[in-house]
Length: 239
Image 1: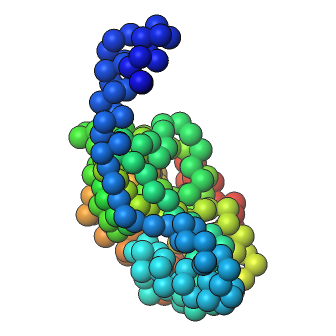
Image 2: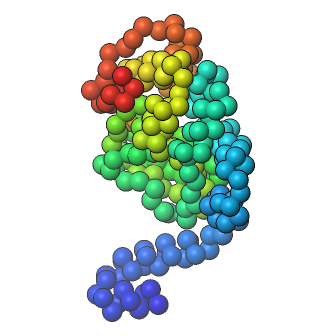
Image 3: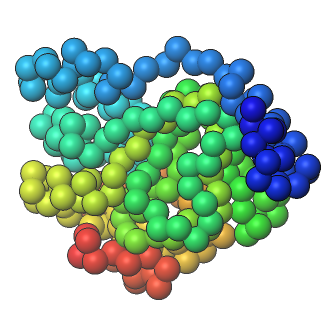
């Protein structure tokens, strides 16, 4: 049917074949993964139970962002508020594009099932494979960001996202003064990191990952000096 419609509307044979191959790959993909919103009963549960459920579903992945691992940010109250108000989850089919080059970033993304790939001409290899537990676009939590490449699902995938605006709003309203100081300092350190990174959508190597861990420790323990703000990342939200 798809091919017939393509012929009827004058679509060239090459594009029609590409559409057909994409359709075959996506239609064969089956996953039994569910999002929390797929279970209607969860929306009728007492709000306290919904909050506990979201906390247990999302907290382990959230703590894979370095500054959240051992931070005083993680009082149970603050963590529960972030998971309830700023986190959501999604399913994507093979070849589905999650974001494209040049668009505004609005959320940090963590792969929880399946595999994704990030592609950009700014990297030597041009491509970074992403597995469960990997984060994309952490930078948007600390400042404004435009995507420098494209993120696409390689298989049927499940992923969670932290909405940057909601995250900041939660921390402004409900975060403790100590939490705000830690995040402000980490945001400034992240701006310095941004100046030396080829791309900000992904962390491309172990050296960079280790640097983020050291930055988080420095912010948490208050042992680093304030770094200059990067021209590439606006940090007004945390100033």
